[in-house]
Length: 174
Image 1 (spheres, one colour):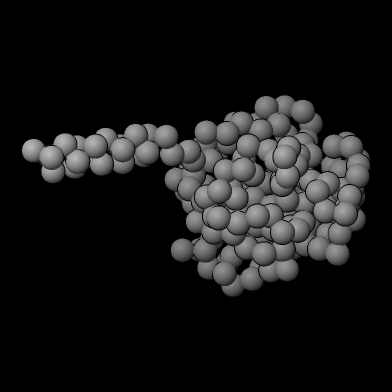
Image 2 (tube, helix red, strand yellow):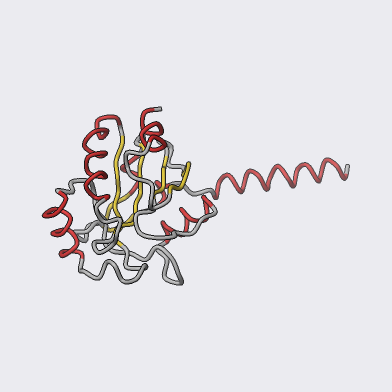
């Protein structure tokens, strides 16, 4: 009888845990123009989430991110950029200034969101979820998170890894 109760408790715990598990689709963010952007609209797509900055040594990655987006967007792939000023104040601009910079210098057409915090006490809930799911912290600008077609995080890739790295391209194509 004790074993039956024990297994029943474990089964209920797993069931409740599965019900409380979040996915990307549980979040709504604000785009760079100030509009709500429910991430549930990305169902069925592979999503690369990247925190960005305009005054960083990795800023030129915007160019390859845009090329990656244009190359694979027809394969149910999307990039979402999240400007953040967490590292040496390398993203000091307003949302308007950030978007103008991205379009003028790199021709960015993939969705950009409003500036957020990706670490610390004011970490955005989406990034809290990303870092918890991957057991990582955001180490610097242009860290990348891979989200599968079901809205689950499947990996984190360092800032120094370029957008066309074979790990990223192979993940998009598989």
